[in-house]
Length: 415
Image (cartoon, rainbow, N blue to C red):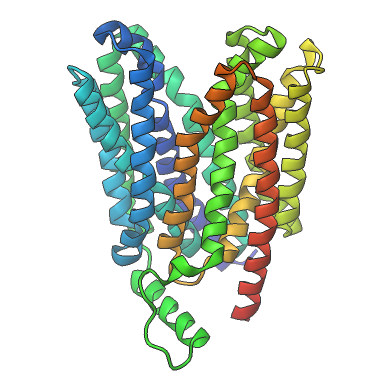
């Protein structure tokens, strides 16, 4: 390996490390509030519907901000938007810690949703424009792994701090942790500059080449591209399936297999760990085979089989853990290939706007999926949870192939 390649790889590692640190903290903040529900219920007398509404507010706000923040990333650059988002997460935790009633918790959820909504447009704009092409699969992989680790760390951290001190100190500790991350990002801010003018020039040149003699492209012209909405649908299905499993799999297993809810939550933990391990393998496979749509198909096909086996009630009690590990690993392995499919279909120069719109599908899926699957369980039909997740994963496969074909055509047009 030449010295230039070594330097480039070292630079890529540092940039991915910074972006992934921020991404992991955003996933951490997804789950700082739910573990505190028992303590908040005891403190203020809220019911679980009121507490659950806080998470709906969080994801709805995040969905709106995510769609809008991509435009800001393309206008002023990713770095200032990143700093603002991380700062808002710290402020949200501080607000939670000082809450004296439901209104302040709602304000905290709104602030947290605004902070969370900036991460995907920022992260993927920086990754796609600052990481060398050969290292992109690995960058997507590490970026995804830190998200899973953030999910895993938050409940343990918050419960531990509450047990040692109280729930207010737990939220203050989360605010302090996010402030430290903001300081680390600020100290390394020179590595997080993206070439905004270069991206804008690339967008203008691409539009001019595709539309000779026409005027400049409208800011919202990308919204007319089928690839953008197919990617949105792709992510909506993906998060709907994942959130459905995370929300109700333990309850469904209790009704179908009479498995204690505590054991069901343990299976979800293993599913998340399987996803983190799968991400690492998925980065290698995405680079090795360069056929992302096939990797996505195989992974989700296996997940479909596992979900249908769970719905059948035929899985032996002692083997119930296997489908969850396989589903988690499949989600993780598919993720880097999924990101490559979306990148290939993204028009030049508008990555912030595109990622902002398509990743808003994640938040909307997270907000709506529990409502639908909750109806199935309330109606005494727990098997429909796993059948529904399997159908969503089938739609992911079909949509992924369509997005991949558009991406191939886009790549051909650029050559």
